[in-house]
Length: 448
Image 1 (cartoon, rainbow, N blue to C red):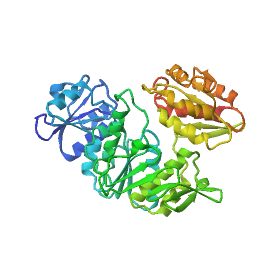
Image 2 (image 1 turned 90 degrees about the horizontal axis):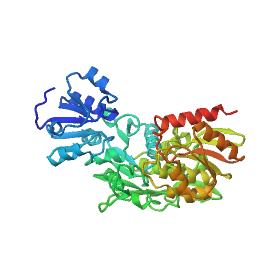
Image 3 (image 1 turned 135 degrees about the vertical axis):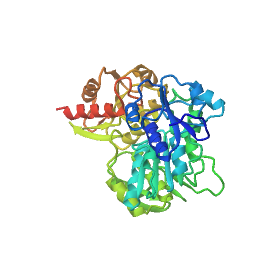
Image 4 (image 1 turned 120 degrees about the vertical axis):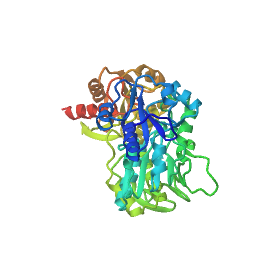
């Protein structure tokens, strides 16, 4: 393709999963573009050269002059906008955009947009299941599964999108039918200057939203709203007008909307208060998108949870084992500790640690003190977690996941649960959180 600078020349910066979806989309549209990546051998390079040999690719340090040939850069969510070459291009008038911006401009069906520090994959999957149960032609993806641009289709009736803060940084106007930030807690503090900057990135999801869904128990999820904009809420408290929550009747706890009981909590296959909150969030989003209650409740009754997200592995000697490897930040680990802890008679043995991404672990202390019998620490930032927890509960170090399981098993009593919820990324010891969770589940299954 021609490298002549024009109003129609674009550069895709970052050749990972989303970058490759941009390449496919731009090629299909007949747009003139090139590709750049900071890595010498990016993941999709061989695919690009095989399928689009005419596209120029530049690997290695970003060349500002090259970037300035474009009038728009589609930047990978994995690359910080603070990267000097990107800032230099932006200062010279080049627009920094991303795949979600392009998706929003081309999507012809309503969008349900979901972000949050934790639980967004679970809630996105649930809303997608609910839409399918209602007979909708639904496309689910974004930060979860299929890249956004690969979902575009003329026959789609609803898009359900999980969006990360990194994706939202380059999203200027999403225009979702309904948008939510499920919760906000410290994450990616190695990329943001602090919680306010992270919060601002998350709240870009509300730009142009027709309706919003807010977590009543987290003030940081409430956006500035225009007058008359429909707002639905969810939370574990008793619901009132335009609200989803929990109601109790004759000793039975129910998922409820306003003053109407929808279904008993005991009919959920997933355990814990955090999963009840996830169910209520999905109901609020689905209701705002026009899905009928019977289809949504059918989906909830059949939902068994996602892999690596507080996933029950097995019971051994009266102790349950849970794989929550997806808890790569403090907020996600807290949700699992509190959710399981308040829903069981015994105590938790928590396995935590890894790459903390600059997080403050002190927020774990109170919940660990209340719900845990012991903490087994692994990984690079074990000392940081140990210091933050202090004398809340007994602590022990493990050099491997196998050792952590053995130490947990020796400390657990019947009625307890062993919970892998690291509050950290996995990259210091594993390829990713999936590998960490798979190895944990495999090792637990192998216990005799």
